Amino acid sequence: MIKVEGLTRKYGAFTAVDDVSFVCQPGRVTGFLGPNGAGKTTTMRVMVGLTPATSGRVTIGGHLYHDIPNPGLHVGVLLDASAQHAGRTGREILTLGAKTMGLPESRVDEMLALVSLDKTESNRRLRNYSLGMKQRLGIAHALLGDPSVLILDEPANGLDPAGIRWMRGLLKSYADRGGTVLLSSHLLHEVEQIADEMILIGRGKIVASGTKDELLAGAEHKTSLVTALDNELLAKTLRDRGVTVTPAGSGLRVDTAPVEVGRVSVEHGIVLTDLRSADGGLEDLFLSLTEDTQRDNLSAAGAPAAATTTTEGAKA
Amino acid sequence: MSATTAPMSLDLSGTQRVPMSRLAKVEFRKSLDTRAGFWFTLTILALVAVVMVIYSFAADDTMKDFADYLPIAGGVLGYFVPILIIMLVTSEASQRNGLVTFTLEPQRSRVVIAKFLAGVGLAVCVMIAGFVLAALGTLLGTALGGTGEWSVDGNLVFNGFVLANLIGVFIGFAIAMLIMNTAGAIVGYFAYSLILPIAVGILSALSSGFEKVAPWIEFNTAQMPLFSGDYTPTGEEWAQILVSGTIWLILPLALGIWRLLRIEFK
Image (cartoon, rainbow over all chains, first blue to last red; front, side):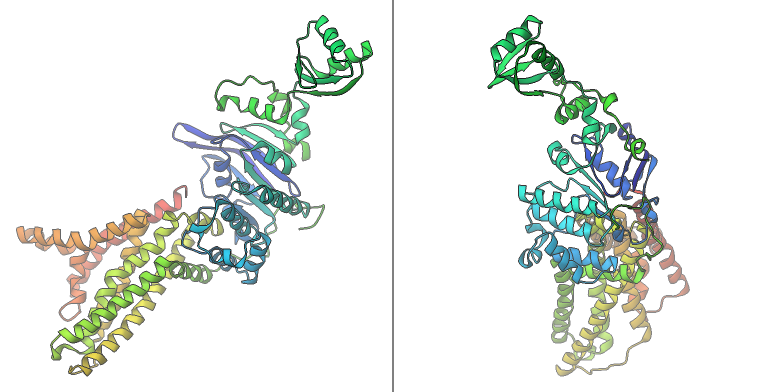
């Protein structure tokens, strides 16, 4: 539904977004993940025509945003919840949106109820709103026109845990009804819980994309956490094979892949009660893929090339 | 939205563009729905009323006709209406709500037109209120011993009141579009309306050559015939209004619009 094709945005010599292509499918929540300054917001701003692209383009349902009449009825946008006149009340902000789109005043009440802003809160001026309240108001504004596509930049910012859970449910059911959702975040666990597809961006480039399983499929595991009925025997056997073993809690940390540990356990009849990889999780993958944009002290395992599965190829 | 077979394309056939009348109405509402906008508008009108009262007591009894009150109301309004327009236009950038405005109507030129229509609408409302206040002032003047003459020169109403305020709307709009920052634009407006005429006055006093050129290049000077004498500029004076108006109105406006249509709106 959202198709980004070869999008590049340069600021002088600095390339904020570098030849980015991806697709967001209807009926799915797509998470757009990357460290601060990776180009997420710029990409989303180009999507809705606020920032002109240097090259490439974005279409929403086959149209350039600029060409969509009354776009609020088709695409719900939340880029910055604070980007509203601080002197307007929450209700007034929604009313202006509803009036522009040609919606009845009752729609404003519906949306306020949906995001749990009560009457007193909605009549307060925006400058007196907490970040979480602004975020709720912004989500209400994005949903005003009952759009089929949602573009949300860091929507969970400032929401309390209950608010994040609420938003997760809201977006899930929205996607289940066939809506397309793109949301960005720099917090992995936030996206991990909500997104069906993930797009990882670092320094303006897509470094990986796919479902959580697809992303993890290619990751190498080099460390395992294992617990056996006889930890000492397992440790001795592994050390005999030249593998480094260190105690970790009630079990052992082993510098080899889980499959090797399993093999040893079968060969020597050692009963395991727990075996899993100690690395190669989404967080490691994320950090390794974006490591050159962070401070240069992370050498975690990861296989960007293997993990990359373009959603386009997988779905089209 | 259907459940399983969600389409990959948006069907836009049933959607109309947001009509200009609706955009303009929303912009008009935006000019009055904040404390700043609402109270500033009210304050301007209150100021007109106060000036009317003071004038009624202070002026000579022979100068308390409607034709005396109207230019005073027009003058006060003409001075402050541009600031109203500046606030309406620049708040989009200063308060950053332009992010939403230009997302709901990505054709930025349509937003510019809507803003202008809203600005004119606001100015007309304020002018009608100013007209009423001038009438009330005349009644007060009559009660205080004035002759209470109601007949006015049509040129005075149109040139000195309506046209002058419409030019004010244009000025505010042009400065706002060019500077796109509330504080900066208001400072710019005062520089234009206060400092510039003084500078021109000094230069004209020093050099008779400049005095002849001034009305061609300085818009305030060029507009004087609209507000004084018989309120009817001569052909040459109209030409001066046109030439200096191009310099001070059309150029900044064109530059401001050209930029707004291209920039990345932050």
